[in-house]
Amino acid sequence: MKCPHCGGSIGLFSRQLNRFGKVKTCPHCGSSIRLFVSFKVAAILLVPAVVLSLLLKPVFVSFGLSGSLAIGLTTGLLVMLAMRLRAA
Image (tube, rainbow, N blue to C red; front, side, top):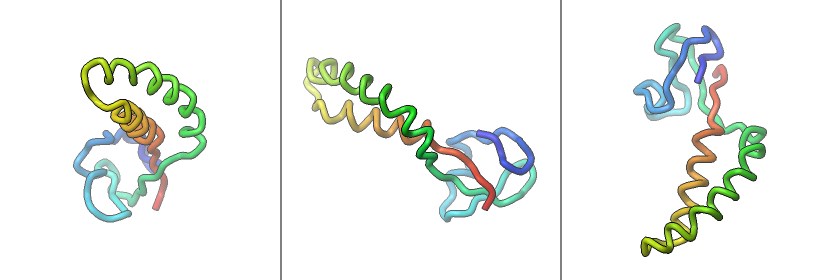
């Protein structure tokens, strides 16, 4: 992800983004940023996520796992890919 202020790259699992609280700081410029879910990106990724969960469900069931686990994992992946940064 890119900082909306300086354009510096910030990892999704970085220490700065995984702190408690709504407002976080950019490690490069020190400006305040906020993490949010972009519904536009989530809507675009919805169809591939449904197809992926339908393809993974029989694989999970054949290994003796619940089919709902495949749906949950693809939903989590969808939300992670739809995360964006904006100025706070």
